Length: 369
Image (cartoon, rainbow, N blue to C red; front, side, top):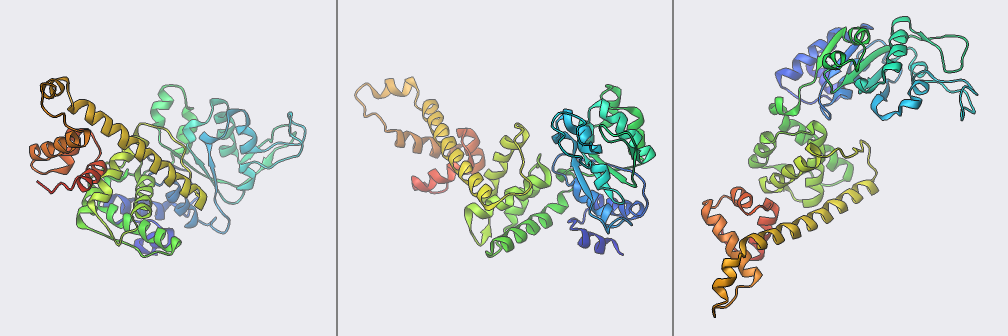
């Protein structure tokens, strides 16, 4: 199988050297049972590459079992991983298989491995090394044949130095290490990814797929993408849903990308990987309400800063007091004049978003400077 065939088969998008190098390594190690540790920022696609390893392995006849270690409460994580027998603790009304047993003869993908409690790390290490474990409350061991692929967005060496992660487990997991580059380090892949997400979204929603203008592609390629591929996917889907245009332009994207910095870079909000139509509609409604509130606050701030005490004194001496609309229109014209027509710079100068600026240009019928 060629590299391109491998990427097509596993849904890996990208032509950058970083991605091609990763594919070459994956194709070399996938057929063995060696443990693999995948590094990468949140949203970089670690699970996609883990699944590609599994699907190219000799265990591909069974589904890969994925576990997010950071999403399981500490009190029940051992039961989730290794299972329990009936009556082993309060509430254990039935015996239950753990993920290790479910993944027997297959691959167990342990995402966010750096979040595991130290006590659980001890039992995990033994299970990996001996391929056997004891369920909670059991008196006999359970033997399994499981391949381990782990992933993290933390520097595990630093975690080891800080005594938050066991050194022996770290060395056991990192037999082969893969570093998934963040999207900002593989900008040559952004255009292909954006068009891919647009096509999938439009096919799923039975609408015509829009084209991207060169300016729109430039905006996408110049943005830092702190949320990586997940953020790019959400941005493309939101842009298409909100605009329903045959063409995606620079103006549609520039403001969206700046807003995503506020959401993803500075806030830890839950991310729903699989959304129902109701979830999507609710998210769009929340975004619309947030936009309205944001516009109101921006315009209030604009008026407060532009209509100063000196302006009032000047106009209280018998001159006509300017209306808020006139003050707002005058401030926008002056900002555009000062920035020589640059809407982006004018928006920054006025401390409002570009979307608000474009809306006000249309509302006040302001021609470009």
